[in-house]
View 1 (cartoon, one colour):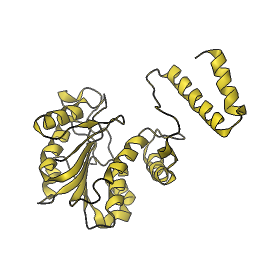
View 2 (cartoon, rainbow, N blue to C red):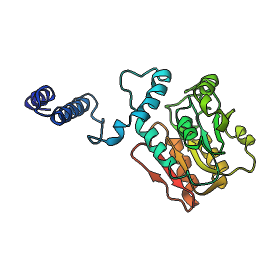
View 3 (cartoon, rainbow, N blue to C red):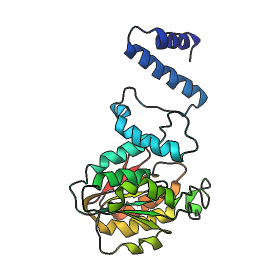
View 4 (cartoon, one colour):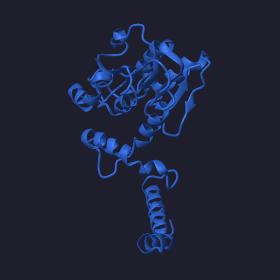
Length: 257
């Protein structure tokens, strides 16, 4: 960034003639400086309406501040993923079937799912070992290790207590913990287990139980740190009619045909 441009942006940030000019100058200044520090950084576009959704960010910041040790100031690293998933939930509101999440952590995503079904007779099944990740395989690269991302079952129960009437927390390793499921059908499944084998196990178990137009979403599909999750998704749907939709948030989803 040229020195002249830098000083111009700083000037407009503080002395611009309109609020919009000041705000936009601040955005560009932050973007340019961030790219100097980390050239791969991308903050996409300016003036997104969803960033002013106060109800959403009240929910989001509750989970981030309480359970993310890296939270400093406005920590929005996964906010776009949560917001996108919440939008997808509106597509299955009219469908029959329960909901499930594989990989609950501290319950932030299950919170959104439970909120969407709170006035129904549906049940949300929340699966987690509460001992962190299982042992990664050769498909998973070298980033993750056993017991990474360990969470606390009591904290999850406390966080999701308002939805207890719709919620079943299922402690155990995938796929053994799926034994609690009988003949239920499902309209929404969130998979966030980071690794190849549990992602594949979840797909093999739940795909036949998904209702038509039901949604399966994988949180880790586009992450360089989770090659196994993408591999499992690609392999499983290679002979299925559904098209995998990979979105810029790092997620991918399918709509059951």
